[in-house]
Image: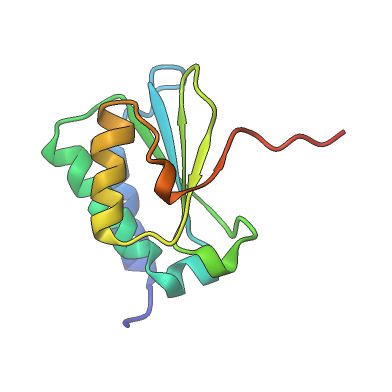
Length: 127
């Protein structure tokens, strides 16, 4: 697997800017691709690329794509978190391109959680 370089990150950033609605409050959904060291090593870069291609191919302009570091479940990488307005956030793990396509079609486009790939549904609370 080739190493991630600054140029690769810049290309990803530009793709995100082109395919996402970055105006605050306008996005219907937010997808976070967890790209800590463990995520990148497990294939998060491929998941990000596939996700951006699907957004562009489907001409979706109301989804914000962001990245984060490690979410703490290194053994479940690559992972994403999907937050759709008015719905609980969903964290998906052990992703492959095929699983990501299924999640994209079902959850992002149709609004149906793909429970068999979901690690967690809902927010964590600290009391």
